[in-house]
Image 1 (tube, rainbow, N blue to C red):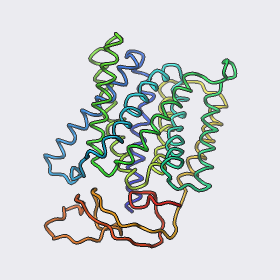
Image 2: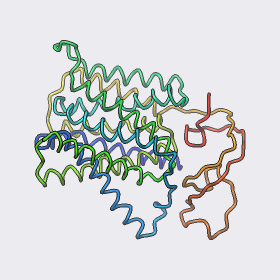
Image 3: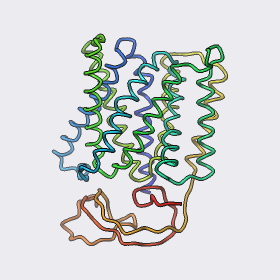
Image 4: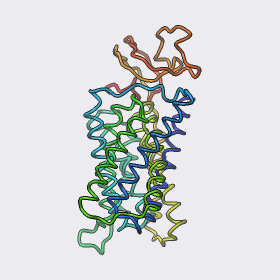
Length: 353
């Protein structure tokens, strides 16, 4: 049941993020791309600050999370640069030159980039289903990007969106390494640091500063589509791993495509619908992946929010140490154990295969 709740959180994150591309394209008619990226991330950071303060006033268990420490900084810095600065700026420029529906579907390539990096560099497990899904989503992305009328056959706007997805793939995998820590704090740092950098860059380049109404619109969009979405995404990665969470998150581009078709009423050729069908099949295959075998848990000591209903936390507590929800945070040890059950590459199952 916990896995299904986590999956629903990731799907909600996908809905929030899926709306960002078409709405951003609307705002880009009146906002410079660099300032757009800036206020999206500033909105996410400031919005999550206010949300966290509100939850803390209510003594919510949601704020009972492990804190970041010095060893987490390198992972966070690369995630901020790649996913908070480079990806959104490249995406905003690319959106201006790409139909909203096509752009939304191309964002599926983020799941491919995330999965390939997770498998090839961070050694997450992969079976034939995952590789089949990667090939189908990549094929669909190529069809959406291909334009034989252009000298190189690829729209620069489409290429830019794929590049942004690669930057987010790097971000997702590095964020996964610190996903046990407070997701709200991670989003706040990402949002404020990345947003401030882009703001300074836009001012330095002398780009036209947007009207207050447009700034507020971008920040509100940023809070929901980036702040809330990223917080839920990080919670998903700690339970499902980077590759599987990205698979669920692949529903976001389809939501964006539907919104785009409704808002812009863009005419789409047959290639668009063929590519969409191929990508849908790829996503479904990835969602249906199952994994289980006999595996060894090595003894370890770490710190993260947890309860004692998941079969991996059996240490002792006094009654007054447990919160009403059962979730709590402290440094705890795991003894070595070998067993077999279906599992995802969460923090307790990132073993070699």
